[in-house]
Every structure is written in C-alpha cells, then in structure tokens.
Image (cartoon, rainbow, N blue to C red; front, side):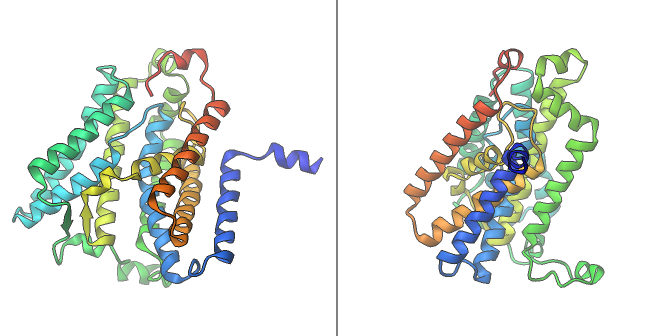
Amino acid sequence: MASIKFFRNLTQERIVFGLALAVFIACAFTLNGFLATDNLIAIVRSVSVLGILAVGMGIVIIGRGIDLSAVAIMAMSVAWYLQMLQSGVPGGQALALTLAGVVAIGLINGFMVAYADVPAIFATLASGAFVYGFCRSQLVHQDATPVPQGNWIEGLEQIPDWFDQAVHIPLAAIPVEVFFFSSFAFVAFLFLRFTKWGHYVYLMGDNFMAARNMGIPVRPMTVLRYVISALIAFSAGILTAASLHSINVRVVNSTLLYDVILVVVIGGIGLSGGKGGMRNVIVGALLIGIMLNGMTIIDIPNIYQNLIKATILLVAIVVDSLVNPRDEQTAQQGDI
C-alpha cells in the first residue's frame, strides 16, 4: 500500500528533482573535477542565468503563450546599453533609453498577440529576429561589447559588504547570481500566487474563452506578460554582463533559447498553459544545468550536446502533450 501511495504522489516536479539529484550524484562519483569549487560555482552561475530567463518564459507559457524573442532582447538590449556608454552617452540617459526600448519590444509582442491575433510563436520569432538584425546593423558595432571600467554593472558581481554584515553570515563564497535567481523566482511566485493578476494568468492559460467571458481583461493581461518577460530578459543580460564583464551578441544564434524552453517544459509547466509555477522552473534549471555541465566535462562535442538536448526537448513536449492534453475549448484558440 505504501508503494502505491508513493507512486500516486509522484509529480513531474518531484520526478525531475529526483533525476537532478541522481545526475548530480552520478557525475560526482564518475567525473574528475565535478565537485571542484570552481566547477560548482560555474554550475550555479549557468543555472541561475538560465533560470532567470525561464522565470519570464514560465509566466508567459502559464498564460498560454510563448516568447521566442527573450534571448535576443537579453543580448541586444545590454549590448546597446554598453555601446552607448562607450560612445559617451550619460549612464542615466543610456539606461532610460534601453529600458524604453525593452518595454517597447514587450508592448509590440503583446499587441501583436493580443490585438492583432498573430500567433505568439510567429510574433515573437519575428520580433526577436528584428531586434537582433536592427541592433546589430545599426546600434551595436561588434559581437562582444565590454563593460566599461567602474560601471555599476561590475558591482553586481559581488555581494555588498553592508548586506554581508547585516545578515551576519559569510555569503561571499556564494555566487551573487544565486540571490538574483532566488529573488526573481520568489517575486514571480508571489505575483502568480497572491495577486489577482497572477490568478488571471492561470485562468487565461486554463481556458482563454472562459476567462474573457468572466470579464478578465485578457488583452491587457497578455501585453503585461510580454512586458514582464522582456524586462526579466534584460535583467538576465545585465547579470550575464556582470559575470563575464561583457556581453556577446552571438548568444542569440546559440541554443540558449531552446535551453530555456527545455527548462520550463521539463520542469513541469505545460505548454497548454494554466499549470505549473516557479518550483517547476527551479527543478528544471537544476536538472538541465547539471546535465549541461556534465556533458561539458566529458567533452561531448557541441553538435552531440545539441542532439541530446533536442531529443530531450522533443520527448518532453510529447510527454507534456499526453499529460496536459488540451480540451476542445482551449484547442480552439491555438495561439502557440
């Protein structure tokens, strides 16, 4: 009876967490250098940036959408900001212009999906390609743009002394990205769980027509989700620049976007919307981050790493379609 109860209580979130734990233990016993401090810090950093992007993607997907422009916004907005600083534009003005651009892209994405009825997958794919092409040809003059010396972004790499002293715990050994990821996930959790707008996101994802008939402002809420996603992507870019002391726009053409979707889907947030939360994002980021690090230590060529990730993503999508089938009403919307 106990075994039956155990299997009944298994959820995708718990299974993925168990897999992450198993992969971590397997890598710890079989891979030289996996438990080295530098490698563990590298895992935490990669998981954190991936997780922050997945937080924004998760909010959009729970509302039954998708944002394929997130990585382009992340890289190009920060590259443009750093480019303006190097050109002598005052810091406050450069930051204001960048934030305005990021919000504008989020508004355009949301408007195309909510008011022009363009399927989210095509609207955000097109906007992401436009953002990359326009910024790279007109605003950003090189692939890698360094952070100017003395810029406030460099200060994000370390935990402030006043915070260390306030909590009376030696936190300097913990990568600061962990605190940013935790903060983003916690704020997103509060938004989805305890605000009426968060409840609207779940209702829209569960049944869009029913939500609209209930009087929920579905179109403004759709726009809001894409603006939030764009701002979170910009924040992830700032954190990446703080960690690497530069931002490389070639990341737009990498598989990072698919890694983000993989984190969300494999963590347990259904592509059909209305299900999942930030705990799913955390366990998904843990599993994918550990797996990617293990493949890198084994020195698996990128082409095979991409093949493995693509296979896992395909399996996760198929499983998701079986576990979270759309009913007749939600299928009629078909916006992802």
